Each structure stands twice: as C-alpha cells, then as structure tokens.
Image (cartoon, rainbow, N blue to C red; front, side):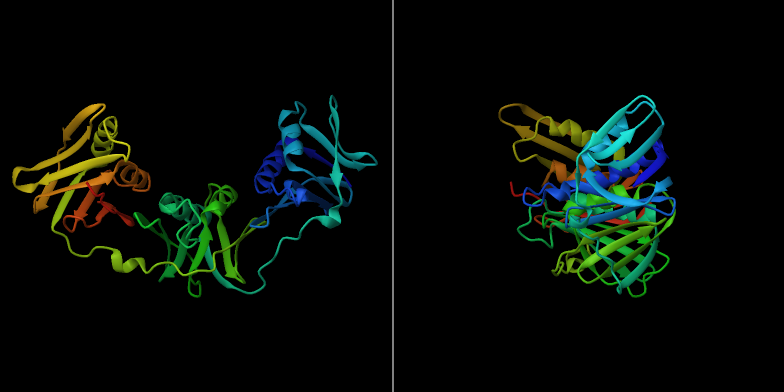
Length: 365
C-alpha cells in the first residue's frame, strides 16, 4: 500500500476514527485503525465493538493495499508534522510516514484480524438534516442517567411523531424532550441509543445541513452521509411511558427572563448545601418570585426577580444543577415555569420555543 496526500485532508479523519477506538486489553487491535487504499480514496475504519465508523478520504493511490496501525500514534504524528505533503506506505518493517523533512515507521498489525463494521441490510429509516439530529441529541442527553443500573435510562430514546423525530432522556429525577423536523419518518420506530455512544455520534454528525440517512434494525442504528458511515449498538429495553408524567394542569405559573433566572441561580449556588439545594418561593398576590439558599457553614442568600405570576402561593426546592442543565437547550429568551403544587414536578419551556420541554422533580427539605 502506498498513498500520497495533503496532511489537512487526512488528519481530521484519522483523529475522528481514533476517538472511536477501544481500550480492550484482551483485544489490543481495537485500539488501532484499519486503512485501505483503493480507487483514489483511503478507507479509514475504527471500532470499539459498541460503535464502528468508516470514513473515506480522497488521496492519490500509488499502490493498493491495507494495513492496521495504532490510531493514536498515527494521529499524533500527523498533527505534529510541519510539511503538508505526506506519503504513507507499507514497508517491510512497518508503516512508513514520510515528508520532505521527516520520516517515521509505525508498528503494524495483521489487517485480517481487524473486526468488520456491520451493515444494516434491512431496517426502519429516517432522513433528516445532520444539524437537526445533532440538536436533538445535544438538547436532551444531559438528562440521561450516567450509571448503567437501568440501561434504558442511561440512553437517549428517539421515536417518530408525525413528521418529527422526538428525542427524550430521563434519569427519573429530570427529563428533557426535543422535537425536530425530519424529511422521512414514516416507518421509523423507537430506539434507545446508549449515552456512552452519544459523543461519538455527535462528533460524526458535526455541524452542517446535509441530509443523513438513519437506519434502525437488528439491534443497531446507523448513520450515513457523504460516503461516511457510523453504526452503534442500541439498548434492548423499553423506555418509560414518559408522556403520562408530563403535567397538563397547573396551580402556579411564572414567566421570566432566562438570563435573569440563570444569574440569580448562580448567585444562590454560592450558598447552596452539599445537595445543591435552592428554594423557589412564588407569591402571585404580591408579585413575588424569590430564590433562596442557606448553608449553616457559609451563610445565606436571597434574590427577587421580575416575573409574571398567576395561581397559588408556592414554595419548592430543587437541585441547582438540574435547573441550569436544561437552560442550554432552550432557545427562547423567556422561560415559562409551571407547577402542579407542593411535591410535584415543575415543567419548564421556552416562551417562544415550542420544540423543547424539561421536567424537574423537587427535592425533599
């Protein structure tokens, strides 16, 4: 195998592939990447057995062939090369990387030992813009459980609703739901993507408006765009019937500026306790919206905010982190907070953003 290429055209693909490699002591080849040169292109393949990725980079192929090398070594070498033109070739002693001023040889592994990347031959499909799918994942993944005790909660659930794909995640203390338009969703069924694979998928999707094909079948989900391909295992489980816990009727409601709320919460957090507890007190008759924290070792704080209030008086405590985590997913400048009453969850929406909602459970005092 021998190819000639411009460094910038290959280095980002090598780095992306390397991030999908595994750290499995019983299968050291998983920390490597597979390279195959043919028809003026270089196929780059990597997998950790949960996620597999294939990328294609145009190059000048002098000699066809394949090789397996340590992804991190090749990526770090390419990143630090000063010369733009690079020659990559297999030699008797390994894999040679050469420029006009630098030469290196990397240890290789047998290409036949590298795992294949599974293809989903038949499955349910959706067509959607890359940045739309990306926004769905990024909007709700914060709410997924970080432990794998209940795998269905340590995942992002995606299902179709009319012309929309709906992204949902919950750890049972909070929930996020994001809706995005898709070009095709008719036969796309619900799927649970493990949280641990989300970062690789978002990195693969990147920013852009190009269409991607999403296919779900045989316990896997795949993404295809511009000749690139990623496949991820999915969770074999049932996501909770979350729609039944979304509040429909409310006893107290508030509308206020998101930035005001965020700044007041950050100030309150200085004095919060070990459980990150902040207390909200709403008195509609007095037009009072107050945020309070108290810590016996540090002191206490309270702030009042301008807000439009209606309904009954209410005082509830929440985990500071659970509140601020969801705000990054709300595109509106103003927030709508709705409460069912003491001990009941709070519903958070953007006043002008109908695509996202968050639910946060209160804390016991």
